[in-house]
Image 1 (cartoon, rainbow, N blue to C red):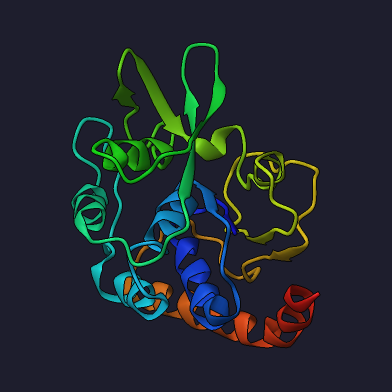
Image 2: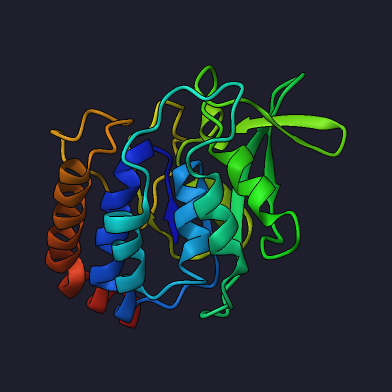
Length: 220
């Protein structure tokens, strides 16, 4: 499973996941930015709990926080303290500053998990870079918004990708199943509850329409 970056459109991803999760047992999940948070959340929350997290726990507003703790920090910290619910590993993509290059974080679940998730979601110019060791990192979507290529490189032979229409480039390699958010979902940082609710509902609707196809594809 591959989750792309795209701010509040992560709610759409959560809706899709709720609709298809009973059909899918990922070898691993991987994501950029908000997709990294969702990818990790699939290992700690049930699909319904993830949609509820988006409905009632996500921040209502995400202002520029270049010098302060990001709005998502407390929620990510809480998420990382929850027990593991699913066995698959979750991976995140971050962009290392300096000579920018993408970094795949393969062992989410340790003491630095919250730090890496914040780094993966640190939108340049909006959220401050995150220091890990002697380097600084920003949003993984800057170099790879939907890391389908990395999923295949890591050994996946069938990739379901849920995009969130972030701002970064998308590799040319296509997923076996690509799910995209509705065209009306244009405001990436509009975290108003009503907007989140619309995105959740849209995700569930899309996921339900895809169930028959996925059942056939996955059984092959």
